[in-house]
Image (tube, rainbow, N blue to C red; front, side, top):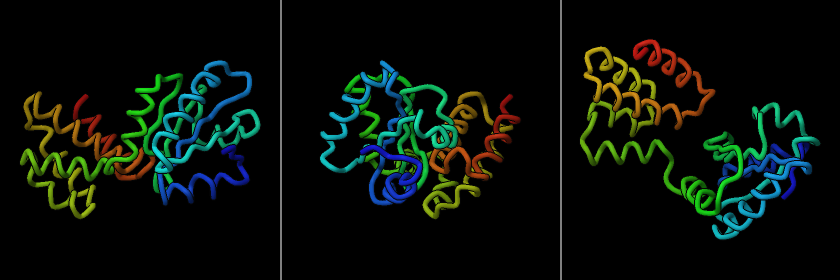
Length: 187
């Protein structure tokens, strides 16, 4: 469906609370966009209504493109629960787009992380906070471990923290604060 600034809130933001909405930022003059759009349409159709596609012409909707930091097209942004949860820029093959879409249909990153850490019994100290959605407490504990950790453990702590940042979203104040703290501690 074609979406404009006038119906973006309803068609993308509100709808993404019901199911993932993939937004294809494109322009008529963009040849790579013309290559990607049929791939997106085919792969989303294969998901049988579990994902919706919205197309936004960046020339006609420059404010939306600017709001969502579209710097190159085609740009694809996946919305879930009102926010961007994944994205890519440029043309992708059918299998790569299918994998991207499959990632939107699985459990959220926070649930996957909790399951992974529970199974491996890695960082048991943060299992409680993660299960409660208390990401700040989990991040604080992980930060307390960075200084004394060897290189391998420090790398793993960073990976877990980045997964939490992704779950929170790039603009979340907790993610922003801890991303800065982690960068200072590591570099």
